[in-house]
Structures are given as structure tokens and as C-alpha cells.
Image 1 (tube, rainbow, N blue to C red):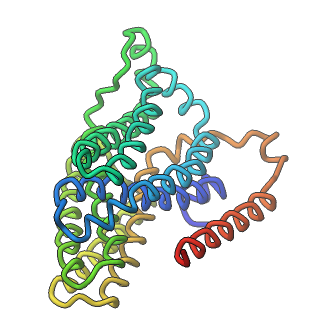
Image 2 (image 1 turned 30 degrees about the horizontal axis):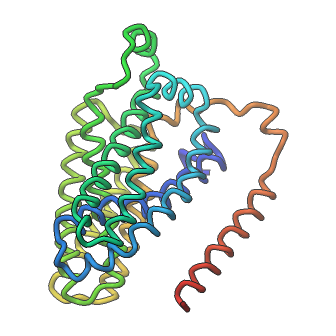
Length: 313
């Protein structure tokens, strides 16, 4: 089995896959909210505004699985970081609810559309910042005692901001990838510009992140190379889309973007692979793989059925 799945096994593989799926939906929501706010007269924005509440619901649902797998992989670190942030971390839930309902307000009211979109975007950026903060605090166990003794509730690591820049840039590229499939040729050209510029931003964020101490060595470096190649192919396909929009070029951009997303998730997790907690013997003996597989298939079938009904309506 290839690295890092030889260390984390099936749970890590499922975590990577489900987190990537979650990122597709959430990227569409965050970047789509910003797009609808800033380009309100763009024909693409109308479609995006209608889809935002549904896509956020999908994103939240798709986020349950990676959250559970994260707790299996890093039980002590995850729970400790949650407790250290305390009320500051608990604020994520009401803020997310406020953002969710703001998306419904913008869909139903022309008068309150822009304020609702602005509120929703602020809520989602806060949640994204909070997750970036938690990610860093989970790995900072030498600072836990000092952090707790000081009564701090905000972890101001130098790597949180660049991590957020990488995340937001990647979200915008993912949004362009999904939105382009339901856009015309002119719309795809505009989205191609967005995708390319967003990749430049996320790449700049990655360089900034590397200057704060994030490094990839050994097997992780191979995934960085895969990520770089996928991004280059994706940007090339978007450049072709600028000159002559086609489903072939869009298909290449989508395939390369998907590969880049999976590789990016693995690179993101690479520093935490060595921190994965040993499998508890009780959990190992319990099994459950077969039941999980059946439940997953039933879930996919149910989602496909719902999508089919929605399209026919």
C-alpha cells in the first residue's frame, strides 16, 4: 500500500476521499457566495444564487464523514484542541447556522440579497479560519499547557493565515470547475479567468505557508510533485478554455483539478501522518468494514435517486 495509507489504513483513505468530496461542495458555496456578491449582474450569478442553499446542505452532509474519521485518527489531539479553544470554537455552529439562513434570505429577497450574501460570506470565512486554526493547534502539543494557563481562546499561529489563503484560492478554482459545466461559452471564459487567477493566489499562499515552516519530505514530496503536475495541466486546460471553450478542455480541467484536490488533501495531512494514534485493539477487533461498505452504497444510491427526482421536477 502506498504512503500515507500504509500508516493510516482504510480510515485515512476514507478520510481523504470524503474530505475531498466535502471540499467540492463547500468550495462552491464559499466562492459562489463571493461571486454572487461581487458580480450580481453576471448571468452565472443567478444560477449560483439559486443553488447556494442546496449546495451548503450537501456540503454540511458531506462533512459529517470526514469529521468522524478525523476523530478516529486523532482522538486526543482533536478533543484537546476543541477544549482549549472552548467557546471560541463552539461559535462555529451558530455562525454556520446564520450563514445557512442568510443564503435562503438572499434567494427569496431582492432587497436584502446583497447584505445577506455579505453576512453569509463573513460567516463562512470565519468558519474556514476556525478550522485552519484548529488544524494548527492540534499539532502544537508543546504549547498546550502554556495556551491553557494563559486562558487564550485564539491560536495566532503564523501558518493560519497562509493556510487560509491556500484554502480560499483552491475553493474559487473548484467553484469555477463546477459552475462551468452549466455555463455557456462566454461564461466558461469568465470562469476560466477566475480559475487561473485563483490558482495563482493559492500557489502564492503555498509559498507563504512554506516560509512558516511547512515542509514535505520523503514520500510526501512525491505527492507535492503530483499536485504540481495536476495544477499545471489544469491551468493549461483553462488557458485553452479561454481561447476556445469546449467540453474536452473542461473535462481535462475537471480531471486535473480533481487530481490536484486529492493530492492537496494528502499533502495537507502529511505532517499529521506521524501523529496518527495507534488503533485501539477493541476497535480493531470490532471490524465493521462490511457494514460500512453496505451503508455507503445505500447512501450513494439514495443521493442518486434524489438527484434524479430533482432533475425530473
